[in-house]
Image 1 (spheres, rainbow, N blue to C red):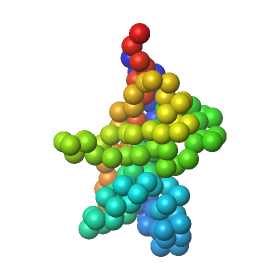
Image 2 (cartoon, one colour; image 1 turned 30 degrees about the vertical axis):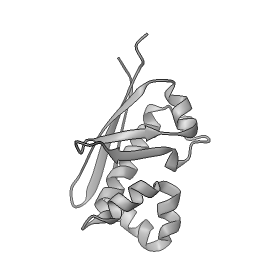
Image 3 (tube, rainbow, N blue to C red; image 1 turned 120 degrees about the vertical axis):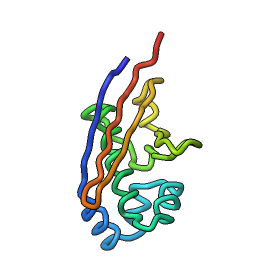
Image 4 (cartoon, helix red, strand yellow; image 1 turned 180 degrees about the horizontal axis):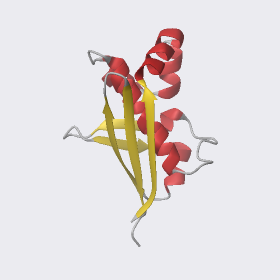
Length: 125
């Protein structure tokens, strides 16, 4: 059963500017080493970084309005499963907030925007 839904959209130029201004400091604050490696290999890495940023924001929204308190950006990792499907791996306080449920995500981008949606599923008892 669906417990919560979150969606986020971001201008790719904002992520590009953050990377240009703050560099590794920004990347390591928001993204995991795997995400940095994966996105950096792309022809236009800012598209992949922006999509993952939007996905993390969408996941925060499914965890509740106070979800950000104490949860690090890097506690939410957006990775691709063996079929290329984007998936979520949670750690730390983000995993605690999940309370055994599961999160599904979908991401997309154009040349200007990246968008992501997250759906929090309850555990079945």
